[in-house]
Image (cartoon, rainbow, N blue to C red; front, side):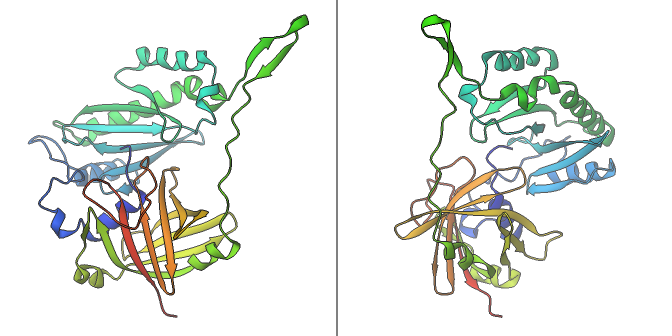
Length: 324
C-alpha cells in the first residue's frame, strides 16, 4: 500500500494505462489465487460487513471503525502477487525522528514480539509509524474477513501506549558544563521554508480545467478516450490553501489539497496531498489557457522537466482552462 499515487488512482480509474503500456506487466492488476478473492470481491465483502469502503486507489480500500468516539482507519489491499491480504493503520507524523528518545523505539520493537503476526514499522517517507498485518488469500469468507478486521482493530486500540504521539516528541541531549549546570544541546532542526511563489501565482490555478492529455512512461493516452470521458479538474481557494477536485462522473469526486511553493526557472513547484497526508511532488507551468503538470508518486523526487520516461513513475497532464 505504500507509494500509491494520489493522482495515479484518479487517472487509472478514468482511463486505465495508455494502450501502449498494456502489453507490459501492470502492478495494479493483482493476480487472484484459484481459491482467493480479488479487489472487487474484497470491497463487496467489506460492504456486507456494514463497512463503507473508500477507494483510495484502484487496489486500496479504507474503512473507518468507530468505537467509544474513537475512529480507527484501516486500509486493506491485496499483495502484489495476490497471495495475501494486507491491513494497515498509520499514526500521526513524527516531527523529528532523530530526536526521539531511544526507549520509545525500543518499546515499539518489544511490542512486536507480543502482537505478531502484526508488526509496527517506521516509514521515513511520511515520518509515520505504521501497523501492518497480512493473512493468506485463500478460502476467504465474509466471516473470516470480519474476524481479521476486528482483531486488527483491537490490536490498534490495545497498543496505543506504544504508538501514541507524545512518546515520539523531540528531545535534546543533556550535557554538563562546569558546576554541573545542564543545558540542552542539539535543538530541533530548523528547516528553511520554501520561498513562496508570487502572490498571484496560486490564484492563476483557480478555476475549472479540462484534462486534454495524459502521459506515463513516455506513452500517451489516446485522445479519443479522453474526449469520451470529458474529465475536468476544478481548483478552488480555501482559507487554508487550494483544493483540487476531479470531476469525471465517478461515484464520488476525488479531492486533494494543493500547495504552491518556490519559483524555479521555467516552472513552479506544486504539491498534492490527500487526506492521509501522502504527498506527490510536482512542477507546473501556465501558458495562456494551458496548464501543464508533471508529478511523481509519493516518496519519489520532484520532476525537473515536463516529460516521462520508461525509467520513472512520473505522470504528465495537459489541461485547458474551461470556457465560462
